[in-house]
Image (cartoon, rainbow, N blue to C red; front, top):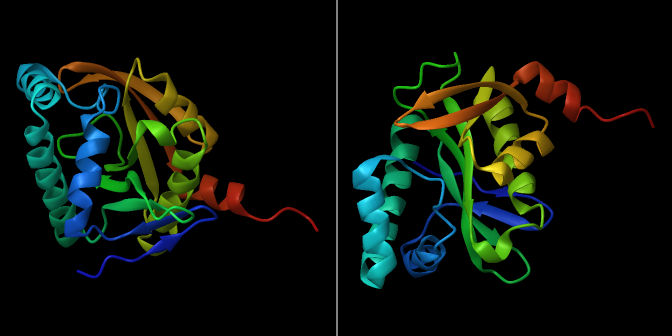
Length: 197
């Protein structure tokens, strides 16, 4: 499938390339990057191994990129590689995921991101998240999109709020306490409409 390219003021959301593996491995190797991703003993063991052995991060990055490519092929949407326009550097991933076994909300398409630690605090997740939501509502015709986050992930919660998403609930999912935010297409259209001249 041809992955569309999205452009924002500071970012390029593009298809993944084979030469992204090294940069993505460096992003996920940072101890804070995947702090709130995943759950369970197997996940914790995998993260501990990745922290101890750099090569495991390269393998994990290859697997992640392959999984993201397959998601695009299977669902017609997915996560983009996020590149900073000024530097040309890969700073993470952002996009849309089809949630499996998610029953807490009628929507099963999630907007999500993983950015390099060096990119935090600059509004880049919000900027790229806005582009992803626009794609979900306009190009894909989604009626509702969610963001599921570990209950302790205050940064993700602030970004969801900055995107105009509303807290929809709390639950336990895949062994951890999560909160989820949601946005309906009508809210997106209303909030995105230009104001009076």
